Image 1: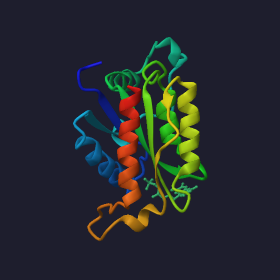
Image 2: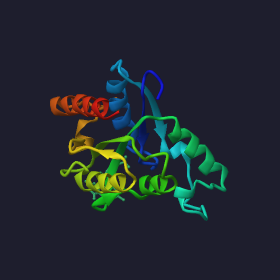
Image 3: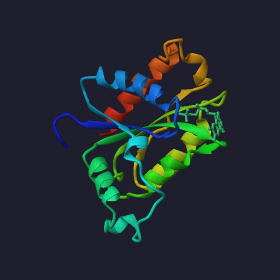
Image 4: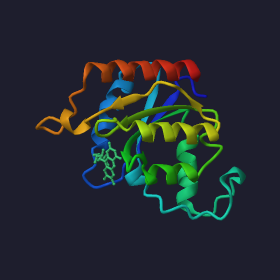
Length: 182
Ligand SMILES: Cc1cc2nc3c(=O)[nH]c(=O)nc-3n(C[C@H](O)[C@H](O)[C@H](O)COP(=O)(O)O)c2cc1C
């Protein structure tokens, strides 16, 4: 690991007009203000992975596609991951799961942080599913997440997210939890 650990914050929503980028930018500002970490913001929409098209199990790490090799190199350089995820149909969104399924060793052993958002449930079901997937990849999952209910009500007229006090508190707690598990 480099002297300053690198947290990769990944925007899991790829939809045009998504609120995921706004949420991720709020959390990224928190993380960048924390001198314990280097931060990289990754937009899954820009990574633009097709549906999984590798013939081999990712445990073998025998990648055949250029997009997989690039994705592998990207995740390899990080020390911890924070996924910023929506909840779709009471579940983890498929773009996030697809991007995870491409790789194995690149995730293993790293702290997994979650920032979830949605309607009244704050994306909690998606977050629980992501933690389950992460634990099967030997990631270091943690009980506490950043959970944002009714996310659209927090966006002001300029399109910026106006965080609640509990959001700021839980973002700081998540960064502390990651630091303890690195
Ligand atoms: C396909 C789809 C399914 C959705 N299902 C849920 C859901 O199960 N629970 C929820 O709280 N919100 C749900 N929503 C509303 C999302 O929370 C809201 O659209 C949010 O903006 C999605 O994140 P995104 O804009 O970053 O894609 C759904 C939205 C979409 C597009």
